[in-house]
Amino acid sequence: MSKIIDERLMAAAIRYARRNIARTKTNPSVACIIVRSENGKDQIVGRGITAIGGRPHAEPVALAEAGDKAKGATAYVTLEPCAHHGATPPCAQTLIDAGIARVVTAWVDPDSRVDGKGHAMLRAAGIDVETGILAEEARHDLGGYLARKQQNSPWVTLKLAISKDGYIGVKGKGQVKITGAISRAQVDMMRSYHDAIMVGSSTAIEDDPELICRRPSLKSRSPHRIILDSRARLSPKSRLVNSLDIAPLSIVVGPNADQTNIDALQKTGANIISGELVDGRIALPEMLEDIAATGISSLFVEGGAKVANAFLEAGLVDEVNMFIGDMMVGENGITAPINRQLPPAGFSLVRTEHFEDDVLYVYRKGEH
Ligand code: AOF
Ligand code: ZN
Figure (cartoon, rainbow, N blue to C red):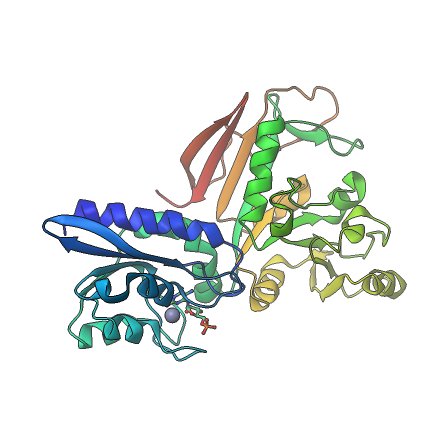
């Protein structure tokens, strides 16, 4: 099959895998599309994605749909098929047994139980294997899983909503509307694509947000909420605590936090994470490592200014989602740490999107 067809089918697989992003526990959401060429015509005969909760994997689902038509067909998989025995045999073996002739993947699976062994099993069985197809595009969605496996850290996306005059809020006033309804709906969607969402305690106390996906259809996909709260100042009566039935809540506290406050928060069902302090603030790299160890692959950081700055200064941001709204804040504005004129250093602009009168600029670390 030509490279263009390979890329088209991989693009379809990448899109399909998006359906279960952040719903597959510690597993990445992978897709497998099985394509058969007959009389010069390519036909999709089976499709599968990693199921909600992480099992079954994508390949057996796609193979079950393809049945006998898998013989001699090509399998497009967004990640290298696994080589380890879980509840079911390795996917590489399942592909071999089904008679697949060719396997095309985007990435080698960095899981130490796989890490090239899946591709090697397929090749040893005489299957033609090609990898690295649309790797950059697949990285967009697999980024969190790859970061957790390769760097013991989640993929960090920093979201900022900046007014036309360069501010992210008003001093002492808490939340002010900077973007319109369509952008806010888009943020709901972005939240649902992440394993966890994070704000600092000042934002949590001043704004008293819920940090859930507000739209009814996305509510059940609300991510784990994590608050950086070195002194355990969050109120057990806050809306974050009151919405524990919708999504879990973790509070990262420092070693000197008041134990009575910690006990009161813990009693509500909130999870307490013990953080280390550096210069009186939670040490971010260690905190990221701790949450990655619990299986969190992607983190959506929503502010405020101090938290945004701390992540940027420590070089811990992988992607910036910068919304520029159409309104002015005027006096007493809180200055954004970065803006269109002052983009994050070492990042490149990869995408621009329009939501009514607002513009979203997506930056990624490095050259793209
Ligand atoms: C695949 N296809 O659809 C996915 C894979 O706990 P287990 O046994 O499910 O294994 C988890 C690992 O499986 C995960 O770390 C990653 O290496 C792989 N995910 N592999 O062949 C899939 N989701
Ligand atoms: Zn598998």
